[in-house]
Length: 327
Image (tube, rainbow, N blue to C red; front, top):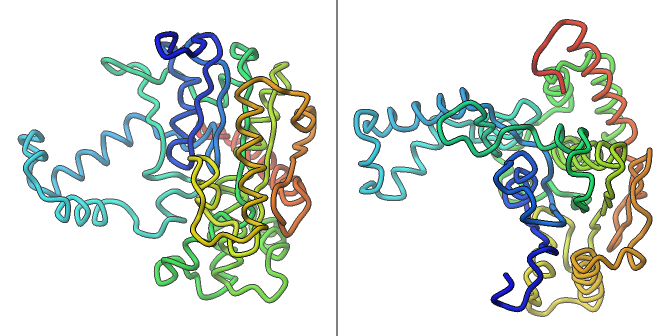
């Protein structure tokens, strides 16, 4: 860093989606301590942790499906099509199942206790502990994050009925009566069942983990900012909508509205990375207050408050049962 003219004491790491989960995974990797000053995640945060035992099970299923369990080194000689086919066989193809609340295949492996372990603790637990209160964090989601799958993978994503969404949410160990009310809150404005499911999952897979991480960090005297990215003319707020801004490129034929949104996102990242806190909105305190960019269909924190209540209810019920997976 210093060799290239940078300040090794002022490093910002940021990423989008899987990159965001990996970014916040650094919190649980003690070997990375003191190597960064700020962390920013877009459509991903201190969540999506996979226990080592399940990662090992998935790996075993994968090499067994490819008939190389006796010699995994043979993987290097297999063609990509075979690898993709095997993944689709051993992992659910519906993203809501594969990477849902009971995450089955997406995220960072918590390998504490394993030889050569890298991640020793859940990132949110690290934030809550206060051990990294000197690290500033920025957590962001797109208002319609999951609509990418409605547009591009409808056949696998469509639940066909709202009742099936209620079944799915109740399967997250939320009482059915509460799950029904929660889904009803999203079943509005003429949404199709697929759009209702996408709206629920956008908050539960992206918004709530961001809010909970920010609140945990704030409670430990850390500085956390929440951001909601809404649509702009010609640019819906789906998964990846902010990538042009994050990598410093311009979408061909972008509208003035999108240009303004992209410029604002770029400036937020630069102000965050350079520590220009006065140019940002107030940090989170005891509520998940958020800034909005673009034109989100809701006020920055509105969908998160009811969701936080449902998650807390689920956590309390799980702890009463002695469930070790309680959030």
